[in-house]
Length: 107
Image (tube, rainbow, N blue to C red; front, top):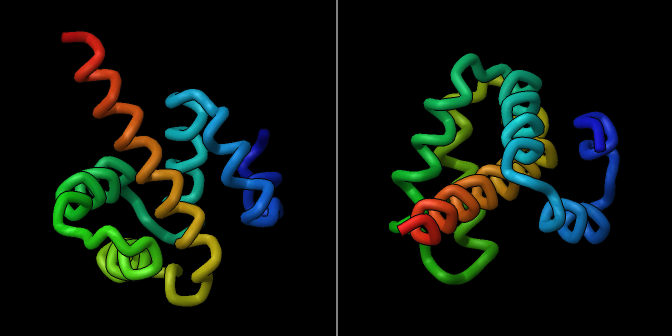
């Protein structure tokens, strides 16, 4: 799936597709979305997600609102494209989960 296809895919179809993607593909989409949202440093955005995830509540809507508000200052086009920011938040959360799982599975 190309990033433009991912952007156009409705959320109901996107989530199952994202769950089937490998880490490298998710990271590629994450990097492309960061660029589209005006960010310059994917690693800084990912580091922000890693730091904020443990502090988030378990309620999904509040969780992503808080995550989006933390990412907005790093991505100067994020306010104009909230749907894109929401997709980026989902992708980065999956990236962190897969990286964390890979680290713990390799013990």
